Length: 93
Image (cartoon, rainbow, N blue to C red; front, side, top):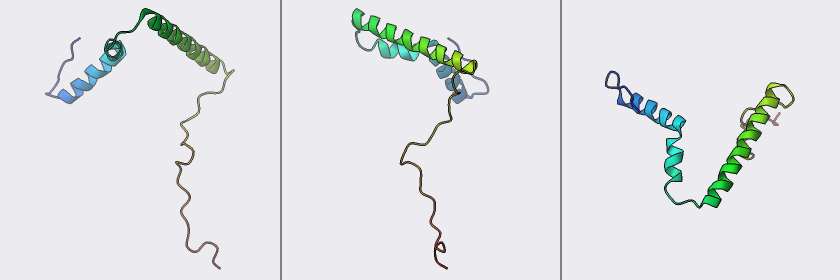
């Protein structure tokens, strides 16, 4: 895999390289090969990944067809939102 460095911009070339490696799945493969995985565990993991891929594709298809609502925007976690600022003159009249 080659990445061309233009105008001595090494940072941009590294970003491009990381993006390409992510797309190719190299990081996932490195993580998987760090320790031995029994064949039975590998089979179970691959089946679970296939099921989740299939469900995701089916969910997207139903969303495109309008049978399921589109994914909502990210909501803040409960308790993480700040309370409204208190006004000193509120309630005093």
